[in-house]
Length: 359
Image (cartoon, rainbow, N blue to C red; front, top):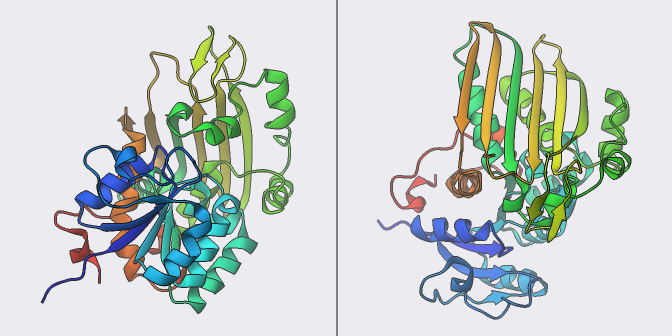
C-alpha cells in the first residue's frame, strides 16, 4: 500500500524559505504553491530562492492564497514571514478558514497563549471548526524547549533554570532587527524599547496582552516551558536591555553604520516565578554581531545535581527550518485547533521520506 506524499505551500519566500523549501523537497514533500509580497520574485519559479534547476512552482502574490488553498487543499502551509502572532494572524485565519494545517517560524507562535490569548482563542476555534491544526516551531522549539525539558527529566530537584541564547539579527531580516532596537541611540532605545522595564508582573502582562508591548521571545518560551514541565506561573516580568559595541558596525540588513555606543540590538530578560518553587530566568540576545561574535545557547539547572549544557555556534537559521519541517508529521497528525508544540510528541529525526511519519 503506497502512502500519499505530503503537499505543502510556502508562504513567505525570504531568507528562511531558502531552507524550509529545500528541506521539504529533500524530505519528500511536494511543494505545490508559493507566495510572497516581493515584486522582484513574484511570477518566478521558486528556484530563484533556493537555487538549482527550476521546480515548476511559480511564486504568486498573497492576494491569491485563499483561492489557491480552497482549490488545491494542500496538507500544510509553512509560514516564514514575521515574528508576532498579529503579523501572521491573517494567513493563519485563511488557513483555518479553508481547513489547511499551518505552521510558522514566528517566535510568538511557539506559545501565544500568554501574550495574545484573544487571537489564539479565535484561531483555535476556527481551526477546530474546520478540522485543521495551527502551530509555531523553529529553533526555540528544540533548543529552548524540548532540549531543556529533556534535561530537566534527569534532575532530582530544580530550584532555578537559567537560559541564555544569542543570535545575529542580520540573519533574519529588517523587521526583526528593528524590533530589537538595532541602530537606535541609547536614548532612543530607552524611550522606545526599554520604556516598560519597571512594570510589575500584572502591569507588563496587561501591556503585552493589550498589544502595547511585543513579548520578547523568552516571554512565550517561559510559558512553553512551564506548560511542558507542569509548572504554574505566578509572576512574570521582562526587561529589554540595549547591547552596544566599542567600534562602529556595518549592518547590511539595516543598510546603515551603527555608531560605537549605539544599540546593536538587545538582551531581553524574562523572570518567571512558579507555584512549585522553580524560577525560570531566561534571556535572548539579538544583535548585529561584531566580527568575533557567534550564536550560542547555554542552559544551567540549579538544584540536585547542578547541570549546565552549552551549544556553541549552532546554525540557528538552518536549525530553525529543519526543526519546523520535522514537526510537520506531528502537526498533520494532531488534534484540530491551535496546538502549541508543548502538547505534541517530542520532535524526531526523519530518516526516510516524511510521509512515513504521519499517523
